[in-house]
Length: 218
Ligand SMILES: CC(C)(COP(=O)(O)OP(=O)(O)OC[C@H]1O[C@@H](n2cnc3c(N)ncnc32)[C@H](O)[C@@H]1OP(=O)(O)O)[C@@H](O)C(=O)NCCC(=O)NCCS
Image 1 (tube, rainbow, N blue to C red):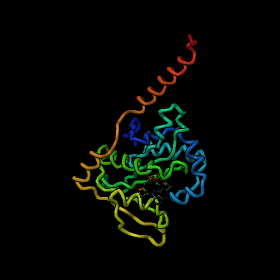
Image 2 (cartoon, helix red, strand yellow):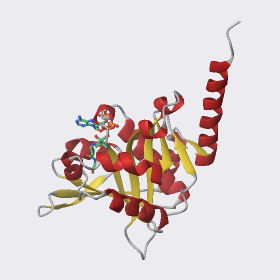
Image 3 (cartoon, rainbow, N blue to C red):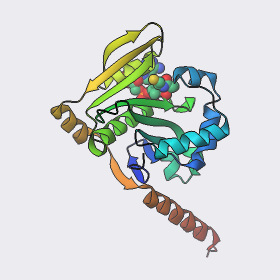
Image 4 (cartoon, rainbow, N blue to C red):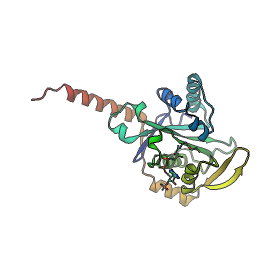
Protein backbone atom coordinates (compact mmCIF):
# COMPACT_ATOMS: atom_id res chain seq x y z
CA UNK A 1 0.00 0.00 0.00
CA UNK A 2 1.02 3.59 -0.47
CA UNK A 3 0.11 4.69 3.08
CA UNK A 4 3.53 3.72 4.45
CA UNK A 5 5.65 4.64 1.39
CA UNK A 6 7.43 7.42 3.33
CA UNK A 7 6.93 6.13 6.89
CA UNK A 8 9.77 5.12 9.20
CA UNK A 9 9.24 3.65 12.67
CA UNK A 10 12.27 3.79 14.89
CA UNK A 11 12.49 1.62 17.99
CA UNK A 12 15.46 0.90 20.25
CA UNK A 13 17.08 -1.83 18.15
CA UNK A 14 15.43 -1.46 14.76
CA UNK A 15 14.19 0.94 12.13
CA UNK A 16 11.26 -0.13 9.99
CA UNK A 17 11.56 1.42 6.53
CA UNK A 18 9.36 1.02 3.44
CA UNK A 19 10.32 -1.80 1.05
CA UNK A 20 12.08 -0.18 -1.93
CA UNK A 21 13.60 -1.60 -5.13
CA UNK A 22 17.16 -1.18 -3.75
CA UNK A 23 16.30 -3.69 -0.99
CA UNK A 24 15.31 -6.40 -3.47
CA UNK A 25 18.72 -8.00 -4.28
CA UNK A 26 19.50 -8.66 -0.60
CA UNK A 27 15.96 -9.85 0.03
CA UNK A 28 16.24 -12.20 -2.94
CA UNK A 29 19.51 -13.62 -1.56
CA UNK A 30 17.81 -14.32 1.79
CA UNK A 31 14.93 -16.16 0.19
CA UNK A 32 17.26 -18.64 -1.51
CA UNK A 33 17.58 -20.24 1.94
CA UNK A 34 15.50 -23.41 2.11
CA UNK A 35 15.21 -22.98 5.89
CA UNK A 36 13.62 -19.53 5.46
CA UNK A 37 11.37 -20.77 2.66
CA UNK A 38 10.11 -23.50 4.98
CA UNK A 39 9.74 -21.31 8.08
CA UNK A 40 7.89 -18.58 6.17
CA UNK A 41 5.95 -20.96 3.86
CA UNK A 42 7.37 -19.15 0.82
CA UNK A 43 8.12 -20.31 -2.70
CA UNK A 44 11.50 -19.39 -4.24
CA UNK A 45 11.17 -16.51 -6.74
CA UNK A 46 13.44 -15.29 -9.51
CA UNK A 47 14.98 -11.85 -9.06
CA UNK A 48 12.50 -10.46 -11.61
CA UNK A 49 9.56 -11.97 -9.68
CA UNK A 50 10.95 -10.49 -6.46
CA UNK A 51 10.92 -7.01 -8.08
CA UNK A 52 7.30 -7.64 -9.15
CA UNK A 53 6.53 -8.66 -5.57
CA UNK A 54 8.10 -5.44 -4.23
CA UNK A 55 5.91 -3.44 -6.63
CA UNK A 56 2.85 -5.35 -5.53
CA UNK A 57 3.60 -4.76 -1.82
CA UNK A 58 3.88 -1.05 -2.65
CA UNK A 59 0.85 -0.72 -4.89
CA UNK A 60 -1.78 -3.16 -3.61
CA UNK A 61 -4.08 -1.55 -1.05
CA UNK A 62 -4.29 -4.74 1.04
CA UNK A 63 -0.53 -5.15 1.71
CA UNK A 64 1.77 -3.22 4.02
CA UNK A 65 5.42 -4.13 4.42
CA UNK A 66 8.51 -2.74 6.11
CA UNK A 67 12.15 -3.78 5.88
CA UNK A 68 13.80 -4.15 9.29
CA UNK A 69 17.14 -2.34 9.66
CA UNK A 70 19.61 -2.74 12.51
CA UNK A 71 19.55 0.71 14.17
CA UNK A 72 23.11 0.40 15.46
CA UNK A 73 24.62 -0.29 12.04
CA UNK A 74 22.44 2.43 10.54
CA UNK A 75 23.67 4.96 13.13
CA UNK A 76 27.25 3.89 12.43
CA UNK A 77 26.74 4.85 8.77
CA UNK A 78 26.73 1.41 7.14
CA UNK A 79 25.16 1.33 3.65
CA UNK A 80 21.46 0.60 3.99
CA UNK A 81 21.64 -2.83 2.32
CA UNK A 82 24.15 -3.88 5.01
CA UNK A 83 21.74 -2.82 7.76
CA UNK A 84 18.90 -5.07 6.52
CA UNK A 85 18.01 -7.91 8.89
CA UNK A 86 14.46 -8.94 7.90
CA UNK A 87 10.96 -7.82 7.12
CA UNK A 88 7.55 -7.50 8.75
CA UNK A 89 4.24 -7.46 6.90
CA UNK A 90 0.55 -6.88 7.33
CA UNK A 91 -1.93 -8.33 4.87
CA UNK A 92 -5.58 -7.26 4.98
CA UNK A 93 -7.23 -10.64 4.62
CA UNK A 94 -10.91 -9.71 4.50
CA UNK A 95 -12.07 -7.29 1.78
CA UNK A 96 -15.36 -6.86 3.69
CA UNK A 97 -13.55 -5.97 6.90
CA UNK A 98 -10.35 -3.89 6.57
CA UNK A 99 -9.81 -4.03 10.36
CA UNK A 100 -8.47 -7.61 10.20
CA UNK A 101 -4.86 -8.21 9.19
CA UNK A 102 -2.48 -11.13 9.07
CA UNK A 103 0.98 -10.36 10.39
CA UNK A 104 4.23 -12.00 9.25
CA UNK A 105 7.74 -11.51 10.59
CA UNK A 106 11.14 -12.72 9.44
CA UNK A 107 14.52 -12.03 10.97
CA UNK A 108 16.42 -13.36 7.98
CA UNK A 109 19.94 -12.82 9.30
CA UNK A 110 20.65 -15.73 11.70
CA UNK A 111 23.12 -13.62 13.72
CA UNK A 112 20.32 -11.18 14.59
CA UNK A 113 17.89 -13.79 15.94
CA UNK A 114 17.29 -14.19 19.66
CA UNK A 115 18.35 -10.58 20.36
CA UNK A 116 14.97 -8.92 20.62
CA UNK A 117 14.78 -7.75 16.98
CA UNK A 118 11.75 -9.91 16.14
CA UNK A 119 9.76 -8.89 19.19
CA UNK A 120 10.45 -5.19 18.76
CA UNK A 121 9.62 -5.31 15.03
CA UNK A 122 6.31 -7.05 15.72
CA UNK A 123 5.46 -4.52 18.45
CA UNK A 124 6.21 -1.62 16.10
CA UNK A 125 4.09 -3.19 13.36
CA UNK A 126 1.21 -3.78 15.79
CA UNK A 127 1.52 -0.13 16.82
CA UNK A 128 1.44 0.96 13.17
CA UNK A 129 -1.51 -1.35 12.50
CA UNK A 130 -3.69 0.04 15.29
CA UNK A 131 -2.70 3.70 14.87
CA UNK A 132 -2.25 4.21 11.10
CA UNK A 133 -4.41 1.45 9.61
CA UNK A 134 -7.12 1.10 12.27
CA UNK A 135 -6.59 -2.64 12.57
CA UNK A 136 -8.41 -4.19 15.53
CA UNK A 137 -7.80 -7.91 14.91
CA UNK A 138 -4.42 -9.41 14.10
CA UNK A 139 -3.92 -12.97 12.91
CA UNK A 140 -0.77 -15.06 12.46
CA UNK A 141 -0.29 -18.46 10.83
CA UNK A 142 2.69 -20.30 12.25
CA UNK A 143 4.14 -23.74 11.54
CA UNK A 144 3.45 -26.23 14.34
CA UNK A 145 7.17 -26.85 14.69
CA UNK A 146 8.16 -23.17 14.82
CA UNK A 147 8.27 -22.94 18.61
CA UNK A 148 10.28 -19.70 18.57
CA UNK A 149 7.65 -17.87 16.59
CA UNK A 150 4.79 -19.43 18.58
CA UNK A 151 6.38 -18.28 21.84
CA UNK A 152 6.90 -14.80 20.44
CA UNK A 153 3.25 -14.38 19.42
CA UNK A 154 1.89 -15.98 22.61
CA UNK A 155 3.97 -13.46 24.54
CA UNK A 156 2.29 -10.66 22.57
CA UNK A 157 -1.38 -11.50 23.48
CA UNK A 158 -2.06 -13.84 20.52
CA UNK A 159 -4.16 -16.92 21.27
CA UNK A 160 -4.53 -20.14 19.30
CA UNK A 161 -7.81 -20.32 17.43
CA UNK A 162 -7.31 -23.37 15.20
CA UNK A 163 -4.82 -25.98 14.06
CA UNK A 164 -4.55 -27.30 10.52
CA UNK A 165 -3.07 -30.81 10.52
CA UNK A 166 -2.94 -30.67 6.70
CA UNK A 167 -0.85 -27.47 6.56
CA UNK A 168 0.83 -28.26 9.90
CA UNK A 169 0.15 -24.76 11.15
CA UNK A 170 -1.59 -22.94 13.96
CA UNK A 171 -3.76 -19.88 13.45
CA UNK A 172 -3.41 -17.36 16.26
CA UNK A 173 -5.41 -14.20 16.77
CA UNK A 174 -5.36 -11.08 18.88
CA UNK A 175 -8.58 -9.11 19.08
CA UNK A 176 -7.33 -5.82 20.46
CA UNK A 177 -9.50 -4.34 23.21
CA UNK A 178 -9.48 -0.57 23.77
CA UNK A 179 -7.39 -0.84 27.01
CA UNK A 180 -4.92 -3.15 25.19
CA UNK A 181 -4.69 -0.64 22.33
CA UNK A 182 -3.98 2.20 24.76
CA UNK A 183 -1.38 0.06 26.54
CA UNK A 184 0.32 -0.81 23.23
CA UNK A 185 0.45 2.87 22.25
CA UNK A 186 1.75 3.89 25.67
CA UNK A 187 4.46 1.25 25.95
CA UNK A 188 5.72 1.04 22.36
CA UNK A 189 9.16 2.71 22.21
CA UNK A 190 8.56 4.29 18.81
CA UNK A 191 9.66 7.46 17.08
CA UNK A 192 7.82 8.20 13.86
CA UNK A 193 9.71 9.90 11.10
CA UNK A 194 9.88 9.93 7.32
CA UNK A 195 12.10 8.01 4.95
CA UNK A 196 13.08 11.27 3.26
CA UNK A 197 14.28 12.66 6.61
CA UNK A 198 16.30 9.62 7.66
CA UNK A 199 17.93 9.49 4.22
CA UNK A 200 18.74 13.20 4.40
CA UNK A 201 20.30 12.76 7.84
CA UNK A 202 22.36 9.89 6.46
CA UNK A 203 23.61 11.96 3.50
CA UNK A 204 24.43 14.90 5.84
CA UNK A 205 26.44 12.66 8.16
CA UNK A 206 28.29 11.10 5.20
CA UNK A 207 29.16 14.60 3.97
CA UNK A 208 30.30 15.63 7.47
CA UNK A 209 32.43 12.51 7.57
CA UNK A 210 33.99 13.30 4.19
CA UNK A 211 34.61 16.92 5.18
CA UNK A 212 36.21 15.80 8.44
CA UNK A 213 38.49 13.48 6.47
CA UNK A 214 39.73 16.20 4.10
CA UNK A 215 40.39 18.83 6.78
CA UNK A 216 44.15 18.63 7.32
CA UNK A 217 45.42 18.05 10.85
CA UNK A 218 46.96 21.17 12.43
C1 LIG B 1 10.67 -16.16 14.87
C2 LIG B 1 11.50 -14.89 14.89
C3 LIG B 1 10.74 -13.78 14.17
C4 LIG B 1 11.74 -14.46 16.35
O1 LIG B 1 12.48 -13.25 16.34
P1 LIG B 1 13.80 -13.14 17.24
O2 LIG B 1 14.39 -11.80 17.01
O3 LIG B 1 14.66 -14.30 16.96
O4 LIG B 1 13.16 -13.26 18.70
P2 LIG B 1 13.38 -12.27 19.93
O5 LIG B 1 14.81 -12.24 20.32
O6 LIG B 1 12.72 -10.98 19.65
O7 LIG B 1 12.60 -13.04 21.10
C5 LIG B 1 11.23 -12.80 21.34
C6 LIG B 1 10.61 -14.02 21.98
O8 LIG B 1 10.62 -15.10 21.06
C7 LIG B 1 10.87 -16.31 21.79
N1 LIG B 1 12.16 -16.87 21.37
C8 LIG B 1 13.20 -16.23 20.78
N2 LIG B 1 14.19 -17.11 20.51
C9 LIG B 1 13.77 -18.30 20.96
C10 LIG B 1 14.33 -19.61 20.97
N3 LIG B 1 15.55 -19.85 20.45
N4 LIG B 1 13.60 -20.63 21.48
C11 LIG B 1 12.37 -20.41 21.97
N5 LIG B 1 11.77 -19.19 21.99
C12 LIG B 1 12.47 -18.17 21.51
C13 LIG B 1 10.88 -15.96 23.25
O9 LIG B 1 9.55 -16.00 23.72
C14 LIG B 1 11.36 -14.53 23.19
O10 LIG B 1 10.97 -13.78 24.31
P3 LIG B 1 11.82 -13.97 25.70
O11 LIG B 1 13.26 -13.82 25.34
O12 LIG B 1 11.31 -12.86 26.56
O13 LIG B 1 11.46 -15.32 26.18
C15 LIG B 1 12.89 -15.12 14.21
O14 LIG B 1 13.62 -16.04 14.94
C16 LIG B 1 12.78 -15.54 12.76
O15 LIG B 1 12.46 -14.72 11.90
N6 LIG B 1 13.08 -16.79 12.46
C17 LIG B 1 13.08 -17.28 11.07
C18 LIG B 1 11.81 -17.03 10.27
C19 LIG B 1 10.54 -17.34 11.03
O16 LIG B 1 10.44 -18.36 11.70
N7 LIG B 1 9.54 -16.45 10.88
C20 LIG B 1 8.24 -16.62 11.51
C21 LIG B 1 7.32 -17.28 10.54
S1 LIG B 1 5.73 -17.44 11.26
